[in-house]
Amino acid sequence: MSLMEVAHISKSFGGLKAVDDISFDIAPRTITGLIGPNGAGKSSLFNCLSGFDSFDEGSVTLDGQDLPCGKQRVFLEAGIARTFQNTSLFDDMTVLENIIVALSSGKGADFISAVFKRFSTRNADDENKEAARLLLSKFSLDGIEDKDCGSLGAGQRRLVEVVRACAMRPKVVLLDEPAAGLNATETSHLMEVVKRICDMDMSVIVVEHDIRLIMGISDDVICMDHGAKIAQGPPHIIQKDEAVIEAYLGRAHNSVL
Image (cartoon, rainbow, N blue to C red; front, side):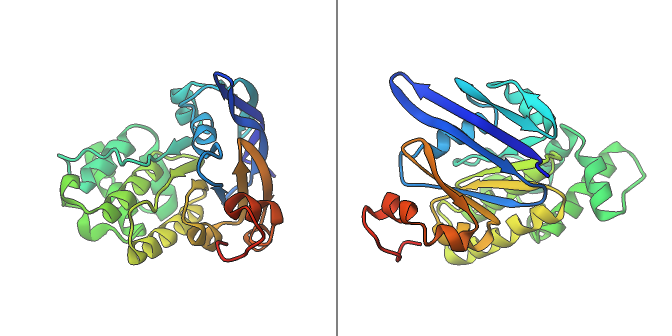
């Protein structure tokens, strides 16, 4: 059973084909890793999947709904949320307030109610505040809820942005280089956070240069090179795939994977 179907997506910039006939399916409650060397087309594909860029050919279907390319708002309303390589938090607001904004922008409060089986009944503002606290607690971030986002370190900012995306009640969360700039401890925490997303009835697509992170959390891994999909499969298969090894190193060698 597929939650999201990506069929024959192609995207060109001038004479350069950045995405070349990419197809794959996303199952419910799974993590899909998207890897490839620099210039492989990962970011271009990511922008197509989130509605930020239009694509020249192909289709994206979510839960049976065909999504019009380049319509970011439609993608979001259908249930696709994303993070960015450069975090985009409201720095003059607290962590809790950032999550409340996301909850207020959609059906997040109802979603968190279903996840945690409990909910405040006082009023809408209190309901969102309680739901935001519960969500931060779910991801072990309740200790920083009153801090201004502008005062957070890189690792905490990344984590808050991931949680904020989840608060928008998506069906699929797209994570764009979430481990960039993180140390080993922060990366380990991030891996646990990403795994917990699936426990909340969401699927994840993550594009990341940290191969160990991808291999440690993914159910399925897609490797791109020169705009095309060159391999797809579970991590233990991708690690041994000759085309993947060749794309990264240019010769048969296993150390990078």
